[in-house]
Image (cartoon, rainbow, N blue to C red):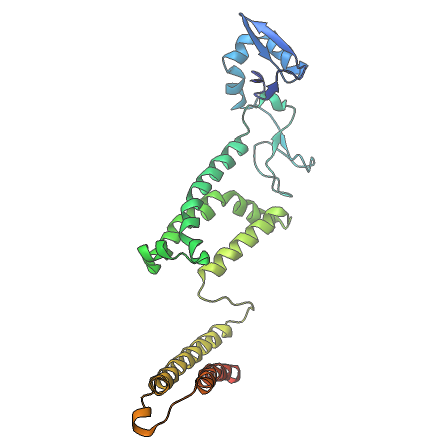
Length: 278
């Protein structure tokens, strides 16, 4: 059995020996003696939710600091310029602050992202398991646009605080975990969105990529043409079309060798791409 502490909101185990107090015929349980004493001093204040309303506006002149870097002190809430963590008010008991605004914001962003990720997974993952019915229902082009529409809020809205803190870390050159998150996620999005990716800072790679793409398409067309001619001639012969006229009948071993030669010719022609000057 559990109960909720009316002061700090924590869940209290009833059999854990924690303090309790009766008020107007009802028993209230507390996580610590400190919360018990605060409640005892003014029960109506906590039962009415007055302590939560007070937490929305900190006292005038409140200073904010970083839990990890206490040398950072600001006059208003914000992010630590060193590690990117949210600044906490100084000298204000954590139990009196009510819900953490950063936690509330990140929780909302998480659930929105989770709700949008479910249909995105349903659309993108089944093809890797051999089930293409969903993408075939919408069509490949439409499916790609659905991915863009659903995925963009997940990255740009739900992940926006990480990009902002990552940008601040590079601007101040205080690199931290948000630098890695912003770089990693941003790079993944860019790579997945691009037709091809340059891994070096030389724009000549665009020209070489186009030349290689054209050579590859030309090679594919050659392979398809020769495979069509080869099979158009070989399949009827293997079926015995020459036997009534010339008495020629291809044996299974020779037919298997011919099919292997066909595959070998495709591979050898494709290897010519290694010698293409791009």
